[in-house]
Length: 238
View 1 (spheres, rainbow, N blue to C red):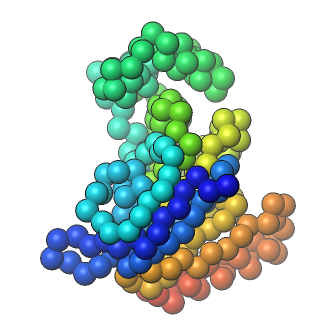
View 2: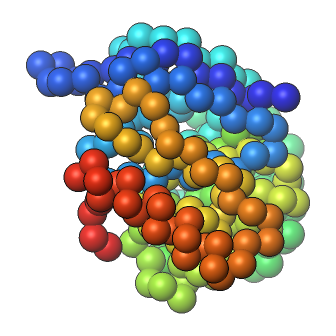
């Protein structure tokens, strides 16, 4: 069962060359997808089209509902954690009382309830990213769109959040598209990996990640993905 079908996506910015050229792909329910590739290959553009941010494109996008989380946490410093989580509800003029209980339930589930009245400056970078993800989840969307949400974090915090994210999407039965430059992160988080190839992007090179991947399989997969990105001059050193 597909929750997303994208057909013949074509896009370019004003007075620039095409970034996407008849790109098609699909996502199944409860599937976790990573898109990898260097800067300028079209990863973030795809996410913004799916999120409804970029509207001037050709092609067809068939999906149910999405929630978008950008690279930065985008928490408002003058609002408490709970108030930040409820901001999208306020903008949509939803039932704030009902959604407040739901937000507290999510905070409690992930051991963050005690911070609901704190302000963002009082939290670590990893905690702020957890709060941002909870805010993203609050919309009850079927598909999470995450654009390099862990890129600014240190290695230990990043690994911790990768595990936390996998646990969260599993508990809540979400599907996910995760943008990253990090091949190891993509392998850890994904059922399938979409690798950006030629520019303009017209087709992904797809890799399935074995459920219980061995170290040997991981190293082989990493080498294959890296060779594709480097071969198309998209690789960007981390």
